[in-house]
Length: 155
Image (tube, rainbow, N blue to C red; front, side, top):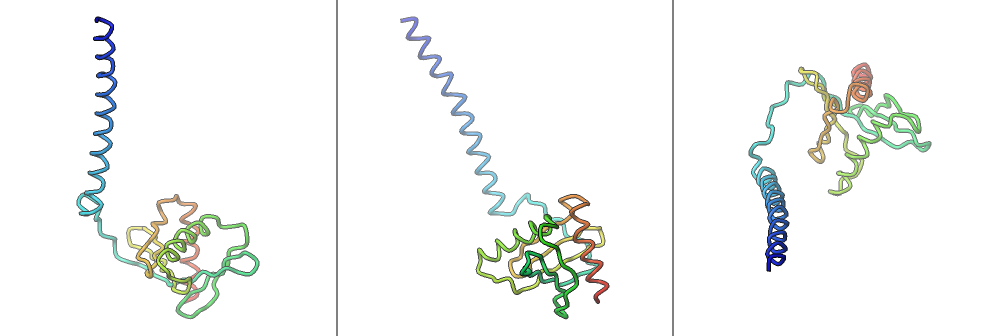
């Protein structure tokens, strides 16, 4: 009988950590869902005032390049040669995926916005999505700082 009692107690010991871990995972998921649904506890820091904002359109060139237009005057201001500017391509791909998901074509312009606190954002007014470009490091951010300067010079 002693060996039966030892085996029973081992099974109990194995069940309680698994049950505790399962309960912990379920509580974490429930808490995350609650925050998502209610918005409670999420960072609601307001954005700093805007210092510059430009509407830009991006088109695929026949040779694999990306053509960049200042949308207000439909003026070609820059291009990205095929196989270059991977951060620009990846950022646009992510935003385009969201447009496709909700049935928006590539026609509407994106908005490149600089804020007084140095934050630089690429916004998609057609979907409400945006990318905080500073989140990916200065080298990647500089790609869009350059576009901001070109758009500013284009007027």
